[in-house]
Length: 215
Image (cartoon, rainbow, N blue to C red):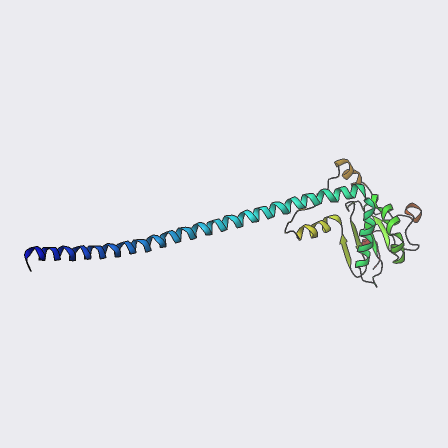
């Protein structure tokens, strides 16, 4: 071959080698770029999932807090508009005790005592239960003691159980006025109520504070 042909062949070989090397470099760059983009997209997706989970958690907690506060207002409204519901609580609390329990004592707020005796008096008399006014119990609440067990159906206890189901630990707040609290604290609830005073206590029931009852 002539010199021109040799030069042409060398150029063609150089061109093909350069093209092949260039394509290999381009493929390597594409793969590297694709891996980099995939990693970045993966990080963005993971970050988005974390942010979304955190937002969902915040929204769930906010919703639970809102539900708790709404329930708190509903309970207060029920206590104001339908205070006689405490008789249902007293009945359920007594029923929760074992059937062979003796010396059943039902403690309610003094203002709820007439409501309990009026609404659940028959059931309480059937169990020979003693109903005792106790200003330390918030209105709407009931505590029942017997010789073998006890039931705390006070409003704070029921509230804690309800909000606990929502994953909250909100404490029931006594919104009574300072004058009401001071008045109740001065009440001597250890004084034995009499049948003539409350009209629903069983004849011959052991009255008085449970700590004073002979074992």
